Length: 192
Image (tube, rainbow, N blue to C red; front, side, top):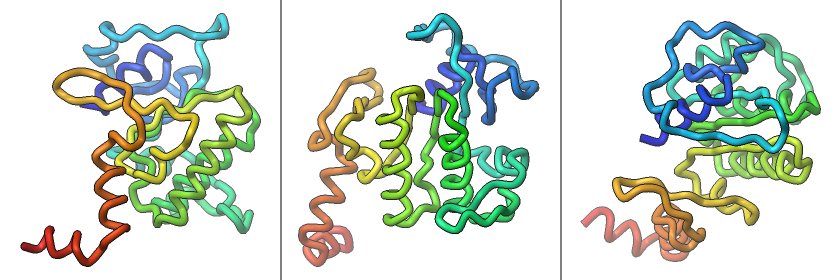
């Protein structure tokens, strides 16, 4: 359900619904999604922003097109598709953020394959976007770490629609917090 919403936003913003960068940068071989007609997107500037849609289900294809990227931390340049998924996510996003251009980032489960430390590095990168103010990120995630950014608008999507929720109201965050507080008791409950 959430991937369809991200696809619709991408289509309305002229970003490849299949994943990747804006149409202006690459051609899209897919038809716009049916749901895109039901989504209205407004912009603070007179033109559509350039963007990047990083889809969890097509990440390998996006990385194959990305070329050489600097490795996070070391600055060593490697082909994106030679990096692990976690390294690739951070390399790709770091390179785009460092390019100093305002973009709309649509990120579908970017935490996949990232250790908790790397999720925190991604959270810092998203915070850079927030503080810079020229870019915006829409992130579909199950990660309590990524959900914890204090400036984020947390939207919960289910059969009832879309609602804004506090961090404490999100089941993913509550479950992880409970587990971290009492891991043995949580494991007993899970394994019974």
